[in-house]
Amino acid sequence: MPRKRAFIVTDEFSQRFTRKITPVLEGSGFKHETWAKCLPEAPLENVKECAEAMKRFEPDLIVSVGGGSVMDSAKVAWIMYERADITEPWTVSPLDKLDLRKKAMMVAVPTTSGTGSECTPAAVVHDTSIHRKIPLAHDELVPDIAILSPEFTFAMPPRLTVGTGLDVLAHAMDAVTTPRPMNSPTRSHFRPSRWFFGGFPRPTRTATTERHGTGC
Image (cartoon, rainbow, N blue to C red; front, top):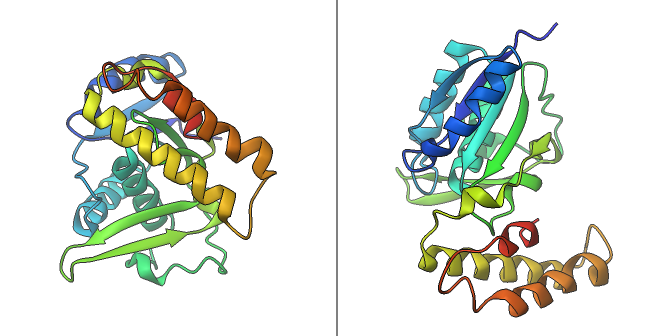
């Protein structure tokens, strides 16, 4: 039987959006705790701090609410929570079985568009001690549920909206040229590029909803 304990991972800016999520959790009988200390670029020490907070709370549901750094932080902290033997993310191999979800499931609620972390098996953390980014890729890191609410992107300033829009375009172009596409490039990858060029001028003035769906 699930214990119905939800651990919300977010940052100082995105914490405002959790106020729309916690009533839903409470209505479903969840006890919850919010950890709003995520930092940009997911510094490794910060991620480890998040993992320790998870271990103390012992959730069976992890909810990440924020941009790519928040979702990546939650993913790597999730690994450390589920697997006490893994203390350094660089030891994770995409070929080894992680056996996640024995303790908790993952829900991702993006508040920006472009990184696609809510529906991909990838995460990137930053080891500040050696000034190195550590990429992780594992099929088990794909969140169980992704909730895309365009309303959560309305607070993005135009500059950030443009930046995430360009991120969408970069992902779409990369998906077209990859030698190992997951789906038909015509259906899944060329279309977001057309959507991008059709809707790009508007977000430069005010945030819109189009980029959110295209990011996935």
